[in-house]
Length: 288
Image (cartoon, rainbow, N blue to C red; front, top):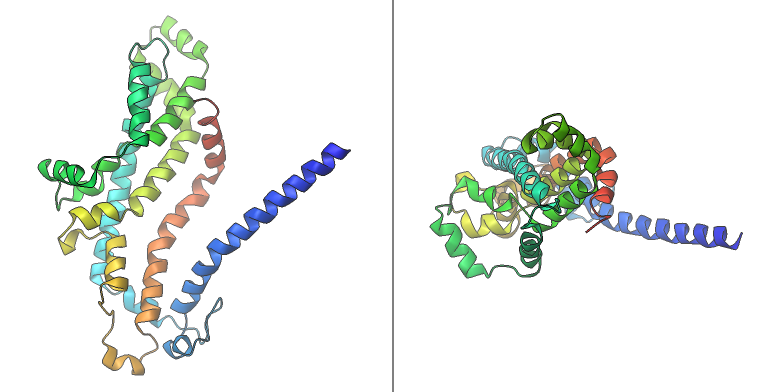
């Protein structure tokens, strides 16, 4: 009886904590959304908080007609799709041999992987390496540096190491090689962890900011986050200030609409893979 009361109290505290964290995270997003849907006069008067005032789609009509924003959206979308696909393939191919105890170099390579999690490359040598590889101001600088992360590699290796060894033994008896076992048997069983890591990689590539600001100079290659920074902090007004008094939008409502424009696509991905997310993360984290 006492144990049940403690469990319920513990669950209640966790639920309360997560609810507070959720509110802290969603309130700013709702405020920005409300600002993007409100008339400029209401925003300037400070009347907008969580709900739009004098609702208008003028800001959204304006930003959706900007060619540079759609170009940046296309760059980010393409980098996310290509980068996530490559990252999942390479991570899976690296994690599979590392999960096998009979692979002689597994422990040594595992130590190298752990070292990369602790020690990061200094920024100048890293910059020179990327530049010498010909990736400076190149689209693939948004993709290739993100194809493997040590954290995701460890999760996938742990997932493979938990799969029953009997499956592989049976396949070997039937004449299957390592590649066929990996491709035809293990990968189809790996949907939860693949979906989870796919979300990790896609969010990382979609939101990347450091690489673009270090290595991208051409406006045509600006990803969405860099374009967003240009709008918000580089002093570029989205609209001529001399005519804002005549319009239903101003630079604040336009910047708010641009922020929502950048956030919504990646949020829309999450519900489709939610059913795999918890299962994949738990399976990959039980064993080290």
